[in-house]
Length: 385
Image 1 (cartoon, rainbow, N blue to C red):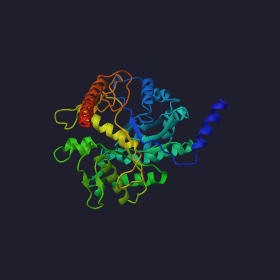
Image 2 (tube, helix red, strand yellow):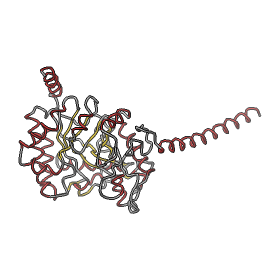
Image 3 (tube, rainbow, N blue to C red):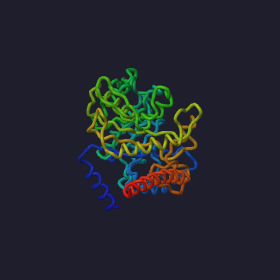
């Protein structure tokens, strides 16, 4: 018992010298579990380690998940569910008990690096919006009392609903109606060194306006892009534009140095008839290019020195999620652990998607080989002449 206490104290001291950062990489994945047929948490650890994914977000603090990730080295951002915010906002003791029950016992073996206080709160229920800032403060105070505030980041992800405008990026601005809640939240997060988390979905933007938006611009594919008339900056993809709109909106409120992290982004591989762009081809293209973009570890046109970080939504297709068909088809992997489409990851079991993509690549290289052989033959003939 004494040795374990010493290890825990050493772990706390190790991180005590700096502000907590929940995301030390650049590419992470949201591990949602609104499903009755996905792999066990233990198998998920194997899947993530096989694919060298070191950062995840979950939407609760499930003990089986946290136990499964012990010793894995994978960094986790847990979530205080929306339905608990009202109680947490008026009861610091309750926040303390929640952390003692759902976070502290798993440290240091499970690398819990952040607590998201709710998800997409602002722009929804007014009562929960009013509870957000006091809930965040109580969670942070509880972490301070437990000497965990320098190890675990406190945050709260937002949807695009917090913006009044995002196009062009230089017009980025928050809704005035939300400032009574968002203003104090940003002030508090600035004080404790927390970033601004945004759920940014080019897919949703394209789905609602497929006539105006160039799908290639949304998919990181070659396109003419846009030029911001105010900053004179060029954007060749919507993802960067969304991130920069966030930076601009924050700067207008005086938070020029606050980092922006994309807490959710992704593309549905299947949708209803009225869900433009939802297809396996587009999902594969977006997520392949997104992975490549994030692994470059570079900034955006407006913030070139601020490395872009993002969590993909989602790890699995989740069959019990409500809403349109797209909501159940954002996964990089199918319910059995096989890949939903090939972007370079390996599944727990073989997938027909992998073989199909391999065939396509084989056909591509076969045709290239034929062209090469033909060119060599022609050159040889000219040489003989």
